Length: 426
Image (cartoon, rainbow, N blue to C red; front, side, top):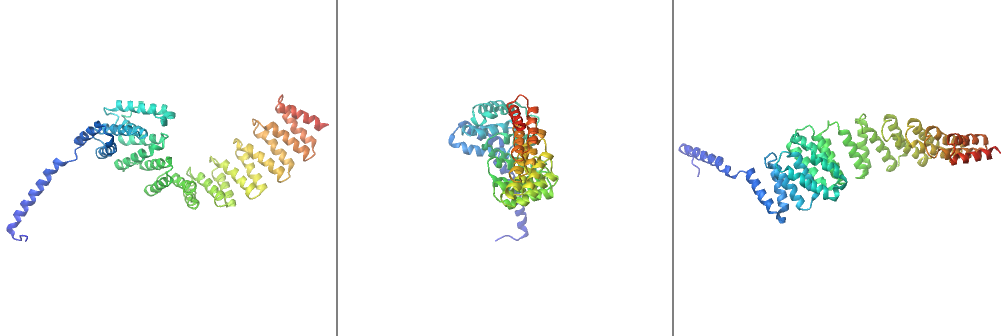
């Protein structure tokens, strides 16, 4: 039974004081001591016991999580890379050797670390085509980088290594950065690198989930439009959900019309309408909107071409197709797609619309717009033959043949054209 007498209270206070003193004293001997932990790791590492390799990887990683700034952290990072190498996981070994070099450039094991890196680069077949730039990494000085800057240098470098086996190391490094530098202004970029790591290993749903994480964590990031575009592309091409893709891509166009991704989003929307939804009129409209709003977009010419193809093949709107093919030549005369466009126009005029004179003129325009095109002489002769056979107009045919003689003297085609002139005149 508890003592309720006032005489008991001093005893309670004294007992409590004794407990507090004991609590403050005894834990000192049970601290997770970094130096002793390192001694244990060093002893275990030097045993080179294969049966303990997996455990050792976990313990070395745990040390770096607890004591990333400890004076022995560089050595532990080097040991971790070495264990991966002993396990035959050269790709992960290279990743961790590189990490050691960038994050702990002043460690005493840097020379040994560099030697091991060079050996892996020289002997591992997966790195054969990347040997030169990987060796340049070994020789660079990273001592001027802060730890945060070293991570920002390390992660994209690892992504550049063309190997699917790097995903684990990239994701691990990204999570370490979040843990150590949660308030860093570059966290949005690090999330994107994590998503890219999943993309590089074809883990599309995981990548999409990381993109979704980005939209929640960084709603005001200047990279949000690009993230939404990438999500839309994933939903369309990999996850096979075109409706969700259009929802996200439409948001890019409507909410971020001035972004670099808006034109690309519009192109993909048109492609989905054409190939998945069979909305051909809608696809043509969106391709034309792309050219109207984003004429400098890299896909603008392809958009016009596809719109013309839809009008020609799906809608059988031949005058409309001619108009769009013609816009390629008018708006983008330097683009080689214009050659195909003029040839398409000539085919439509001859085979679909029976406009033979216009067919011949379209072929002749090749000499005007694309004089270096190797088949210009053949196309001019074809224009002349259309005039002879379809229009029964020898004079106009001779004019086209004469262009071949004048523009390409001494060639076999010029000789052929000269014979046709002589025959037409007879």
